[in-house]
Amino acid sequence: MERFGENGFVLDDYVSDTFVSPICTFCRHLEMSGQMRCAAFPEGIPMAIWNGDNDHRLPYPGDHGVRFEALETLVLAKAS
Image 1 (cartoon, rainbow, N blue to C red):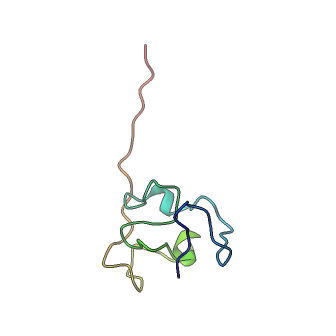
Image 2: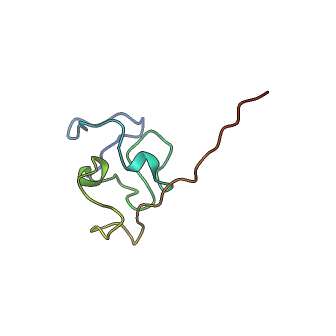
């Protein structure tokens, strides 16, 4: 099932309750395209993972062996 059209708009058959994932937002595999895709789920991240209902540090069907990995911590220094 395709979730996004070529123009990036959500198709009528799919609506997300959560626009920002409490988990995926902090994963290094998330595509920064604004669409719910990543290295594990190039066709679209399942809602159970996107909403944080599933611990994706563990295997999930269809994840191609790619699991959650935290982003590198960014340290922002205040310019003096």
